[in-house]
Amino acid sequence: MKKIVLLLVVVLVVAAVGGYFYYKRTPEITYKTAKIERGMIVSTVAATGNLSAVTTVQVGTQVSGTIQKLYVDYNSRVKKGQAIAEIDPSLFNASVEQAQGNALSAEANLQKAKVARADAERTLKRNKQLLTDGIISQSDYDVTETALQSAQSSVKAAEGSLAQTRGSLMQSKTNLRYSVIRSPVDGVVISRAIDVGQTVAASFSTPTLFTIAQDLTKMQIEVSVDEADISRIVLDQKATFTVDSYPEQTFRGKVIQVRSAPVITQNVVTYVVVVSVDNTELKLKPGMTANVSIEVAKKEDALKLPPAALRFKPKVKPEDAKAKGERNSAAGQRPAGSPGGAKTSGRKGAGGQQVYILKEGKPAPVAIKTGIANNSAIELLESTLKEGDEVIVEQSGGDSKKKSGGMGGSPMGPRF
Image 1 (cartoon, rainbow, N blue to C red):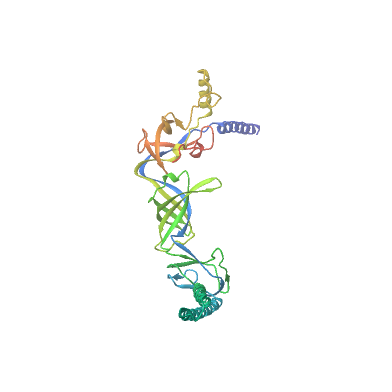
Image 2 (cartoon, rainbow, N blue to C red):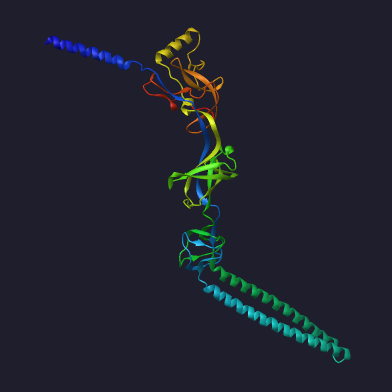
């Protein structure tokens, strides 16, 4: 029995020692690679904006009053000149009647003044003959001449008063006509801000009663593009976008305007780019948020490099790093990373960017030059690599149980 217990103890001790050394050992390094392929690369600039009608008219009122009638509602189609609302015309009708009365009175005063002028002309003509015959004195003749001049002035004053009353009458009729609010364009009512019984006041700023979209089959998106990307946006570039209402459908558009006025929000500078959209099916509605991608560059037959390959940076085993440090010390050099020492690894070599390939089981750097890029691929412009070659994108093992590569390396370098 004691032999069995002793044997079990020995077995447990051996297992514990073996397990300890097994888990303490450094994992072997393995690499994940990806092939360089040939295909199409499309570089885009992403931005967000809102859909709106190309022409949107805000309809207001030029007179104040109480809304008496409404002839249209949301989504109503209207024609140019069609009545869409009416303000209570009672006060305007009364004003027209009063102005007409004033005009009639002014016309009567004018006729009266003309009669007085005609009488003064006859009197002056008669007194002129009497003055020639010596029947009246010069002073009597002067009095009649003065009376004629006064009568002529009265006629002009009456004519002026009549013109004023006619202008007042015209204004009253115009206000009466404005009490009926009409559509200025053909379109669709997309907003209504009034109800029957509501009082509207037209003062220095005209209140908006309706918003009418002239043509919803042609729409546009005003997107904000960052100042770092605006130099790549030109007219007639193709654009695609999605909206939350149709997440699985991609809509198409075209850049029709690049505005030069900057928009500064919290020290962030953006520029407005207008994208035209064909909305023949009327699926899109004003105000929808659009996630837009503007195509700024396209290559049909390019070598495609995985973006992870540019972010990859190899890691070495602790014993390899220690041996490398000892060699540097023996050669009279400081270890890499110590003050004053030269870096032994980095994202860029003397020729610029670089990626790594497997050479005799170990990563070897290869200098490259890249072109346009998107989220899934980067164009390989100049390199000794060719289609079908494999580049390292990820590393497992070494000095860490975690995988390295991908985002574990340094940034990609230049902006694409």
